[in-house]
Image: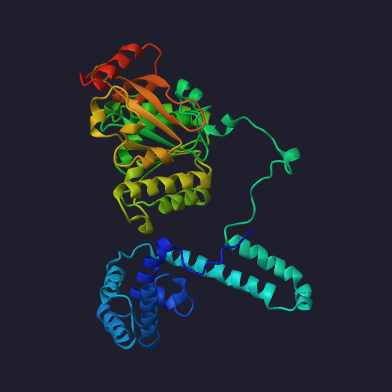
Length: 455
């Protein structure tokens, strides 16, 4: 495979790495003498790094901002520069104002990068600086270095060939790798449910049932003997647990305190049928958890608790904290990058992930909510494989009904409507065939809404 011989750090992490080595003694001591000027693109960053490293070598501590500025001024006074001095002071300010966090993660990424560079260099020496007769003697070693370099550069070739692997090809039903939502018409439109490696998004105005629907997806999955990880950033873990208990036992939330033993008895009966299925609920504060932290938590569950979730529910993705290198640019682009990372996690772990996001304010009175109504960033809808909108008119809310509108379906038929009934007391949502308000009436309401006449 072709190797990337670029010796600079990934662009998105250069400022973060520079801030760590200039300000964090532990990081500087770890990489002093190993990390080089050439690993940074900007000449100003290279100068800052060179001065900080020289200061550390002499005094065994990282420089204060004032000290670094004084040393840069000495260089500017003695060396002709075509770059205005203000550019230097601006970059120094960025380095010292950068928020340092997740030191271990940054150190690991830099170590991986440097290991890769060393392997590439060893491979180059073997191929170009050793005589042909010597290369013949160490051919096996050379091949091993090539393998290690390729792995460091992005892994071995794990894809498949269409014709070469034709005889080994087995075509299986795609539905085998899907987790059903429990809503029959929705699952039929999705080809059996949300597929592994897919990101599904529940879209709705505020207060219209996003969390309730996500919990119902979890309840339906565990009834089908699936393991569910439910991560919550908004509703407390205790309240989420109560909703699961109420929905599974069909006992109203307000009655659970007095009917605890009855609820436990019902859950024991379900447990005997679905074991080893379970629901693991974890609460994080809003904007605390990153996609990398979520990945680490899932991997920890797998090896420490032997719990490998079939479905991951994230309530909700907008409340994840972006990685430091993603916190640049407009908010809509930051959200888009966040969703790309979450979908990347689904692909990496080969697990379906369902999350939710709010629609905009005008959709509060809109009979049919679609992807065009998504709030803040349309990139969230672009990244998601499946978008299910929760639609509820005022009349539907009065009779505790609503609709699921399949607004996007990357692999199959979109724009399917599923009518549902909701029991708030027991946190249950289920599909119905004969809604109080017909689809024809809904479409008529939508036409009136679009013409400005309201519902």
